[in-house]
Image (cartoon, rainbow, N blue to C red; front, side, top):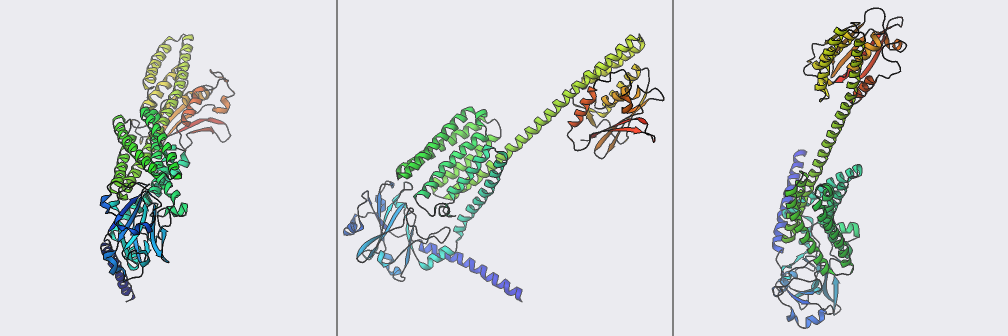
Length: 614
């Protein structure tokens, strides 16, 4: 029962919300009736309302003023309430609402004299209890002159405007409360894009500025500043940013938010310079961008001076010139990049800039902020995608460079092994010649030439198939066996689970260990058989390669004589260890085991090489 009661209350509350939305739209449509007015244009700041009340015929229809407003001109507005007097008499207080102008005064009578109340953008603004709407200017009978007129004194300094476009409305307290406390569908349609834009700006600014502090990449700094000033320029009234930063809307705060649109373009230009690396990739564009950036810095300085001296006309002209230059440059720059694009990075700039330009022009000519907010949101997302793509490409190139460096290092190490092997083989041939063993010498030369040819043919690649590596080891062992009068025996075995034609290992990775086993392990042994066994098997994701000999062991080898000088360092073994280290794997790629019996006597050495299977 209680659950059903709660559902009923929820339904009623929801219904009231829809009714409130409907009432709001309905009231707005009724109260939206335009109040008729007339205008008197003058440039004399000393004109008073008392003087104008003497002869109200000086006021003319706004349609008679064809030229646009100028910051130096003063416009006296005579609002006619003749048709609304009966309605106004039903309440003691009403509210006059209209667009904010730079300097505005409303007049009222007190103690038989005319008083002036400043209500302009840079003066005492009306209360604002709603995100979208101000309360308006309260008025009563004391504000009505000649029983039917309200008088305003206006200086339009923000931009050039048509007086005939001005609109004036009035509301009672009940309607003001409804407007400020309930949003219409139209209001929500205005607010939702702004909140989405705010979310995009917040997320992208935080991500970008954090990455800048991490990487110190200049393009990320200017992109973060670009997003920040876009947000400040497009949403100050919605979030009352002028109250937060400047304690209210005044000339200084207005100047900041106006100049911020020039800073937006400056950050945009600097972002392109670093993002596209124009100094290297697009030298001609780089020169143009530097000129534009310098011009924008000059405009920022001049515009600040304009506000300091209240030269509002110059301020408007400066911004118009800046918009014209940026529009022309933006269009020509996009065409240039489309023609000269050296990478996909340029297309992100072109697409994002085009969408932003369309939005900015929509806001300029249609006076609807939603167009620029939409264009800016799309541009921010596209530029973010462009930065992500750039990082991916740079990371890919970095990995390629690392791989090439690894391959070159591997080739350099292999180049050290081959001369070492060839030198040893030629020494063996020399040894046979000295012994005058012609048959063995010719046999050795034949096998050596075949092995050398295989090595040279395989030298282009850093890796070799396991099957080819086994054949090369067989040729090498045959040569060494022939060289030392078959003084040792050898075996090479491969696990049946391994496909030797599908697995690649570093080229000649085992040969130095095999050579070391023969020279230092087997040959110094005077008694018993001399065996070397090479095995290949798979374990987890590794190829286990073992070189096992029953020689004298490493300790005994250091104290015995053999055909190589003991004080000569094994260069091939050292290089091979470096090649294994270059694999950059987390596992231990090389194990050397000294085999011993129960009495501690050496039984030989086992070399275990672990190679990751890719």
